[in-house]
Length: 113
Length: 113
Image (cartoon, rainbow over all chains, first blue to last red; front, side, top):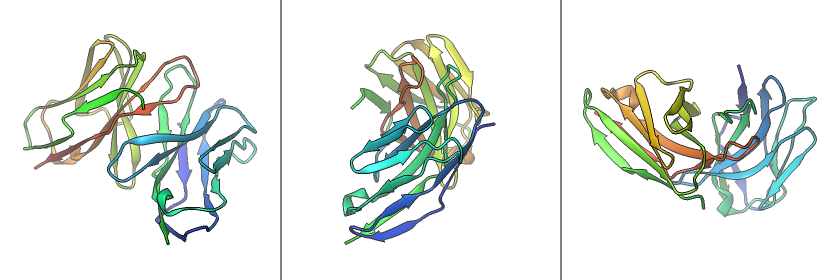
């Protein structure tokens, strides 16, 4: 079945550091890929998505590129801020009509001033 | 923000008692989902609905049932709560047109003693 493997956390970085959170997936067909973010005490919010190979999703300075050849969708940001502290989830949708999401286990990111 | 509310937001109950969680949406979206979030597991799909009275199981459906009698409401019932069902429960919705984003509610924190 479908699966998502993402970088184990927690990750702690200093403000303005470069961020990479790795995500790889296993799926049949051509899934859509997502990054969701969860701030403390809140639900999940969509951060960015990509629906086909080589697409780049971007939002709030975060980027991720859908790499079919390496089955990856790594999240990057050039300069993180304290406000980026949250839990980040990589997810895929198999696009077989029901749009179910399969999630990774989440990566907790803490940015220190 | 997508119009999704969950009730109650917090609940403490005892083992063996029935519990019903409610998800209400004002977006007229076709698909609705129930997930549970547990440390080390990310989010896992419990049940989902693809229309009024149309539901199907997710990967962790044992011990849970759902009902959807109106487009806007999706109920999750724990027939006889167990301590293993202590979790944070999230409802999500999507439009069902393919490759669409799921939008999440704020979550319900359930503690089964």
